[in-house]
Length: 167
Image (tube, rainbow, N blue to C red; front, side):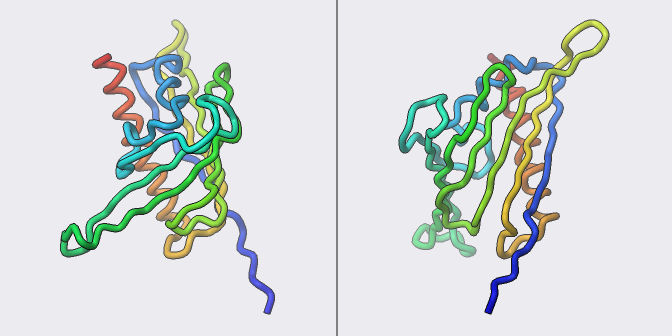
């Protein structure tokens, strides 16, 4: 029996940061192996192989969740290994793909960009864009996944803005 091929999921989320410049925010994204500082629910993120800041770098990201009754015995670890496939510090963008995981991704590639916002007098803040293309994920709808990406980016933007302001 032939397997049905579903169309790829595509999405984009954007967050606008009023105060920090693109040059102030980019180093947070460029630091590919410190996602736990920015993304809610990620407990650990570290380099597995490759060179920091270079395509081919692979990171491990993990999160633990307690069972429904809150017992430690039933802690579940969700994890993914992600490979940096492109990084451009001049354009302030990077792309990565999920290689292995236990959370249901078959294929997932994302691009993140930090763009300056200009007004008549020069730069006024920045925005972060997060694009993705993925195979449908079992147990999720595209709308739910888009909502998850959007809320994650809003949270990341707030944390990054706070980091710059308290810097």
